[in-house]
Amino acid sequence: MLRASTRKDLIFKSCGGSRFPFLQWVSSSRRALSQHLGLVGALGERGRGLSPTRLPFGLVLPTRLAASGRQGGRGHVDEGSDMAVSGGESALASVGELRDDFDRNQFKRELNLLALRVPLSKIGSVRSKLEKLKLLLRLPRVKTIVSAPDDSPGEKLVLLSEAVTTSAFPEALETLVRDLQLGAPVPYTRILGYDYLGVDQVLRALLPKDIVGDVPTSFETIGHIAHLNLREEQLPYKKLIGRVILDKNERIKTVVNKTHKIENEFRVLPMEVIAGSQEMETVVIQHGVRFKLNFAQVYWNSRLEREHHRLITETFRRGDCILDMTCGVGPFAIPAAKMGCKVYANDLNPKCAEYTRINCKLNKIPEADAPRVYCMDARAFVR
Image (cartoon, rainbow, N blue to C red; front, side, top):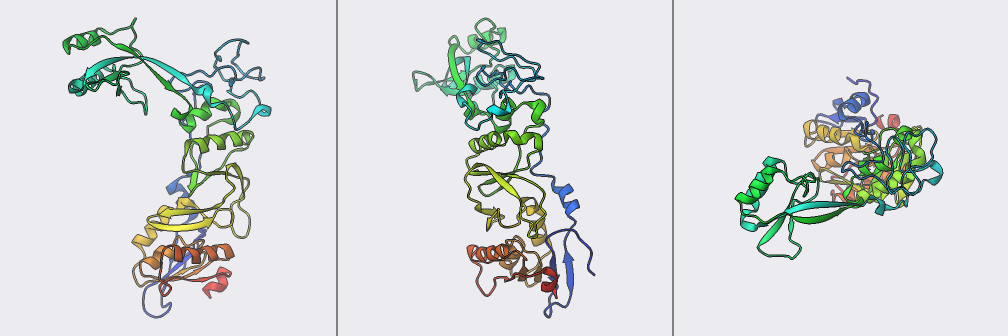
């Protein structure tokens, strides 16, 4: 018996025998699926409560990037001062000044640390003891054991916590140095800059939180394309946001933003490129299956990957007959054909039908086993 469904991918499964002796509707509600998978492109809540001009490791942006004179702000910057005073202001002065070529050198911070020269034979012991004492440097993606400046082959430098200074030298550390017969701590300088920071850290520093709200830190990826759903108040900063995402993700070459609701006949996403290349054709790999598609011409939703895989692995069996009424570029049809199902695939969008045929060849499905692809109205197709 057929059950009503709001889901786009309508698939019938035959349970053997003659052509379509028994049809079982294999689908699930889009609403239930959305609740289960969550919204990939949703904007995170992690930025709440953080000052937008202050970075996690304590860097305060210089005046050239800091806000100055914007009405309604609570912070201020004294002309001639080297540092911005945080308190609600942005690292961008006004919408009129928004650019995507901001000065990345302004994010540099010099870490002036102390380090212990440690023989290689004692490295493990010293590191373990410093960790227990909470005197070891703890910064994400920063090595705590580095080569000595003179490249001494018999020893390394172990970096101490930022809290350890010549004027604040813990007694426990003095004891450790004396007991292990180590030399006095030596100065060590490490430069951290724009490359060290993540997308959310940079955007929290650059965007005015009272205007933009939560920082857009997550997005859907389709091959080399990043897909954002920016809110209206974030749109004046879209090029800046896109630029930062490009900088921080080597695989991303294009950043697009959804411009309005999907209301067209083929359910193609209305979008604009906000950063990077205009190339919309890409390749997506899901569970070893490759799908070529033009994101500007076909329907694609990466959030359905788990549901696709679940149905294919748990419901379909070799020899089953599958009727895919709205096949898209083949996320159901092609894996089903590869596992030995007889597949009839259809989509009203000619581009979807075209890419389904392309993807059959891309995945080296023999012509005799490939889905039979149609381009027609689903109601006419199922008849």
